[in-house]
Image 1: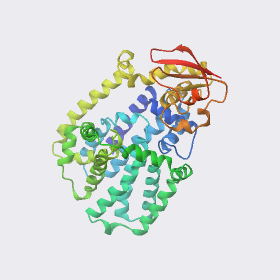
Image 2: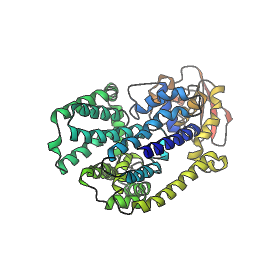
Image 3: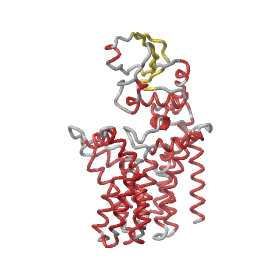
Length: 437
């Protein structure tokens, strides 16, 4: 236990330092904007990520430490898995699992970036721990806690719903129904509904817009592209690392840990099937990774293969960090350079008012870096949170817009006969425009 605490604490300190030093990405800034306008839920995602940024506001004077509450919660997942595994495997294997997680591109370095993945990973893992305890101890208190964990997980990311089919298949396939307390299940459902009530209520009030958006985003495409499935399979093998993937595939776990198969391969199989309907983003199956890494522990060569895994992903992480902190290197990649580019651009938000941006990423980043409320111009890009705000539509006879040269304008600009004048080119990519009428 002392060794685990030492590894956990040191790795947390490293994460907190890096989280404070690295500027918020555009998507993170978008979630930060949500924390400035707290709601029961949001169009794009449930509200947990906004709640965490709200808690982090007290740390904003310390560079980008607004991330800290979310990073700490995400890091807590490692402690949950320690308690899941400690009675079933020796500490040497647990230490292997911890290093696999810490050097994972999404569970490790990726956990510095605050997205809905951080809280959902914590509550997915906590729900596994509580479900296993509920089957063993049959305590109504644990069943209630399981419902609360699942409800909060639903407030983090909708993918938590996959927990239910994974658990049901496990119970059926492994003949564990005799360990289920029916009154406990009812209590789990009730507490789950209570704790996810903010999301349900928001969707009821907004014609289930968020549910519909996520379903269409993940499942609804008019035609099939084989690249979706191929990129999904190859991408997941790479993220998990080929040797670790093979180890998990060939492992034989003891009976007490057979649930790892269902919570590991279950989500991966689900997203494999959805890849025939739409493109699957690389991080969507992240809920499967802890269990898949748990399966890999039972391959006889995992200890040897761990060093190749650490060398490979450790080198990639070092390269990414070097790129982030070296201006000449980060300018080679537009996505890596984007936060720094928006940070420089944020001075415009202090000079021109009211200022609008041409995308939610730009608007959110300008708002975060300048601390001056900046909105995306209504209908200039795909519908998002900014389009739900009254401030997205100019109300005075003059406003300013910063946009990339290649981006167009919403149709209502010409329909309402706004006059446009170019104020200045801010860089080869950005232009500042003035509109009057």
